[in-house]
Length: 224
Ligand SMILES: [Zn+2]
Image 1: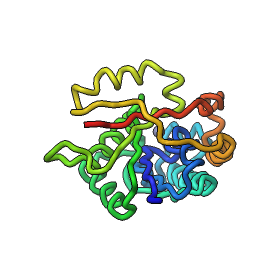
Image 2 (image 1 turned 60 degrees about the vertical axis):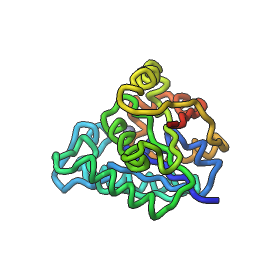
Image 3 (image 1 turned 45 degrees about the vertical axis):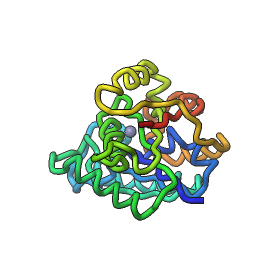
Image 4 (image 1 turned 135 degrees about the vertical axis):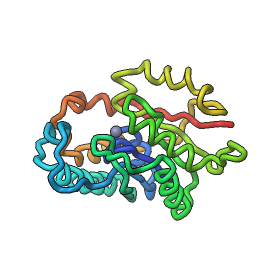
């Protein structure tokens, strides 16, 4: 069976939102786009809230945590060197991210790609657009590979109206439609075991209600 390639904006989103799918389908590849390690001396408010004194330490730690989570799900973690919005110095282009993702897709040769729906966070919107640009033939606007979008957790639970907003605005930006679709699932216990790998963020309010990550995972197929 060919692998599935799951695109993650940050070093946790794929597992938070698709962990149960990943638990049921070994040998997936999880590509995190915005995983570049900042230089020493940088510290952001978010990283400070996580207990770090350096953003470099924060991202190095998050990379290790993501490797651990993916290993529990028998997935391969790939971390690309593009900036998370909180560290962005404005030097990277959307095209450079899409080309790098395209290289990974060519190397992995997946059966299909799964990317974020683009809820709430600007990095999630960028990751969705990157995934779409990487798989859609710009001349014919036809996906060269099948692609599904996942509803990000916990955003989908906390802000359910945002799913409706994306659906309502879809035709204005993209040709084609989104169709609710099922791509598979696996044991919830394994997803939960993987979630605990993200220790450095578990004390944040976003993780207070673990049930927000235990709801059924939902996917939308991008159709012509
Ligand atoms: Zn994220």
